[in-house]
Image (cartoon, rainbow, N blue to C red):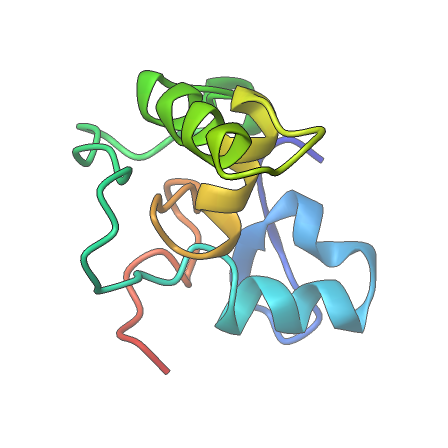
Length: 108
């Protein structure tokens, strides 16, 4: 599941989200939703959206800096890859694949 696939309702979704109803719900309404606040670690939006999971990053300069700051504040077991996953989960980056029906949806 590395590309966009049709979900149970016929809408295109990132393939990883089709593992069960809880994944579909998370994908559709939480993962990658923009976060609008004063967080300073959000990278500049990339050009074209990723075409497949192979085009996604696992870490960036921003996630590396965020991991360093979290460690400075006492967090353990956090590195740039975990930092990037956090950035995806809270909407600092939008990694919905090109063609995903939920890439451009407004905030719910």
